[in-house]
Image 1: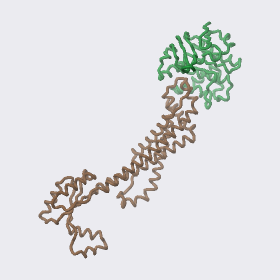
Image 2: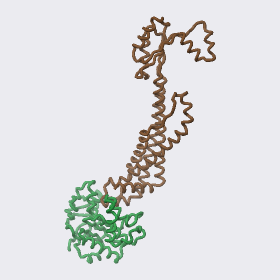
Image 3: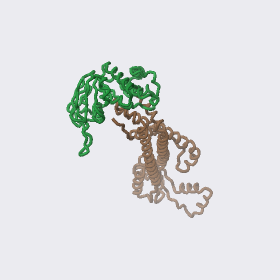
Image 4: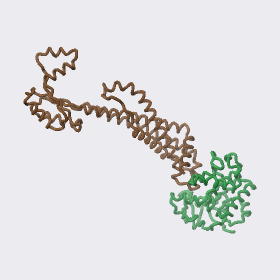
Length: 223
Length: 294
């Protein structure tokens, strides 16, 4: 599902140049659950941004879901992103729309037939246990609920790959556990998951393959 | 997908608020100016065409030709080319016409010791020749005939009217263009403001894999909707102005520019004005810049 070969990422030029990632290589098989860990500033977010082509690598090759991401033309990026669900630390819900509308928005943007939108959106909300809050607006949600809505939005288009960038970063332990449980449920239904977190206490609970980044280098790949 | 784009465009239009309204008013203003100049220019053009039909060239003769030679002279005049119709006006006919035009003062002509008016031939040029250049050439050809003293007439004043129409159209186009640019910039500003307000949505759209066409289409539709509303407002304004002005103007037109009645824009021309509005709005929408992250 994911293959990186000697990927480096440098920001800036000349003396202000900063190496965000250096010579990263790894492979993630289809259906695998990988935890991406490391301290803040280790390069986790940059690595995820490379996977959904928000950034282009300075060096190296990246393959994601059958797309040669490093050579992808701008016009082809939407096709790559349709196969990826993304969750962020902040839920990024649209303030003027209800939870249901936030989830349905994805399907409407992608041209899903109208008759399929409501059942698919409700199925995604049910999967994250948020059906009862479908008509609530983002400001009426707790942080945990907002993150669950964000997860529903990420999975509503049935992506083959879920990228989670610190989705539990703003949550207390109980809520973080809930989100982790939901992500595992999604993975158990066949979705490949890359779960980035700096919260070391979560890693043992996950008991999955762990990639550890430090200072932009991959220092550990175990599990 | 179409309903999504239209819904988003309408949502954006509501968000644009007063700036969106200002954009509609500016487009309406520019289209009213353009349409007004167009309307006046069309009617002026009709007047010019009618006057073109009435162009006459008068061939003054040195001497009144004897009846036996008149037929030959008329044939030679016709033979110069570009002549549609001829009418011989004898010295007596000319004096009669003078008296008629003098009306109650006609007895002044009776005081003359002899008839000073020359015989003449009134030439109506062919439609193809009834242009400033055509009539100038016809006058030149007629002047070469030995019996001819002087040739007068032509279409200089029609030419002047045509030049006035051109100037009028030019002024209209410049004013319309300036207002159109202002309208496009206002639509652009309104749309940019909306893009700023919806940058989160655009970011989400890009992240989930929406194409740039889908992301940009609502801007285009929003601009077009503003342009369409503005064009309808402009057409309604022109209709009202036309309905108010025509009853006051029409009695004056036959005695000034010789036009019996004023006409409004045809359905095709009205549609063209509406299409121009939609185009101006769409341009404004397309020119709006704004990119979210990712």
